[in-house]
Amino acid sequence: MERFVVPADAQSWVEVSADSHFPIQNLPFGAGFHMEDDSDDPRIVECVRIGDFALDLAVLAEEGLLDFEPSFIPLGWVSFDGPEGMSALRRQVYELLISDRSKLRDRTDLREQALIPIDQLTMTLPLQPRAFVDFYSGINHASNVGKMFRPDMAPLLPNYRHLPVGYNGRASSVMPSGEPVIRPNGQQKIGDDIVFGPTRELDFELELGYYVGAENMMGEPIPIDEAESHILGCVLANDWSARDVQRWEYQPLGPFLAKSFATSISPWLVTLDALEPFRIEGMAQDPQPLPYLRNPGPSHFDIELEVWVKTPRMERPQLICRSNTKHLYWSIAQQLAHQASNGTPIEVGDLYATGTISGESEDSYGSLLELTWRGQKPITLESGETRTFLEDGDVVILTGYAQGPGYRVGFGECRAEVLPAMPMG
Ligand code: CA
Image (cartoon, rainbow, N blue to C red; front, side, top):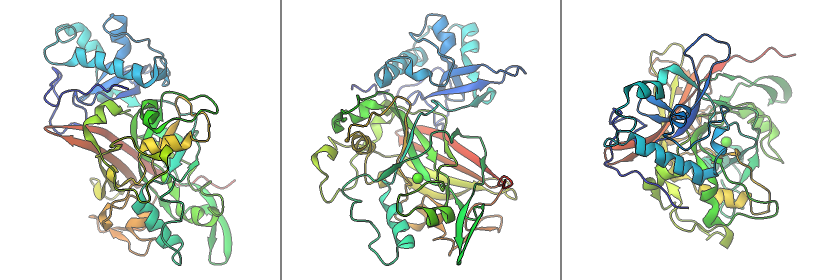
């Protein structure tokens, strides 16, 4: 499909600071609750982010400035024609926001109604996913976990470089940034004892997520050169993990309860159109993938990723990891082509995540499991506290952006605080 790329030198009449994640080159989609009144039933705003404002699409549609049918549910983005429809809508929004266009700029009353200061919205999921699939495509993470969990074997299992390993997760526990994560209870093996209780090894995972916006028919695979045209856009994903539960339960069928209690995502759906200028070749793949998995061209993206942590005793968050999506072995196109290769239908609203994205250096690992090397090397925070895994009250913030010439296309934050475990029933 044709991509609409906003020129690097384009400016909006809405003021946007140089380090904002949301200049006119981005224009991501989202949905938020408007806290304008005290009613029990706050209005849902389907919007596009520009600088520190959310542009209310329904207001503009009502005025005839946008060809868009508001749905007032967070599945709104699929009420028009999938990724292509979203791309066309984003282009219409661009035409309203570019500095030399006056249709909205010069209508003070309408502008005030349509541009909502972002702090007046509580963002929710851009779409309520119907399915969640998690891959394992960060090769440094997979290799590190192999070294820790299976020290007597080669770090990567024999299939790793032949197919994107993944599993079907739970869509019901995907939650928007800002909602707290409750420490899960689970079964663990401590010494020779098998116990059930709150995880002692709660961890985050730094991942890129993406939503599907176009289906395939049952039995019909998706050719890899068409895979990206099924993707609506990307988010940041924190795939929370309970490592002690994981270690005990994962063989032979893979992750189950250690991962399914929560996944947090950032609220803004960043389109592949906006990420197009940051397209790069991935790392060399050896052996060459089978034909159905061969990338048709550069299929990776250069997105800087960060993880910040704040404990209750800290005044501000501290950076503990800096990574990049270029460390993915398998591209998102390869992941989606592989998922559909057996003919399973992928559905509009499905959420996919790449797997933990760790870099090569010790300060670029995308989980505490790796950063503290299974708890053997605690990290010391600026407050003097140490951490192996997360404690109650800790806040984890993922953020990320692609750096262009003079502008950034970013994701904002994916943030959550850890709450104590529920009493065991
Ligand atoms: Ca994961």
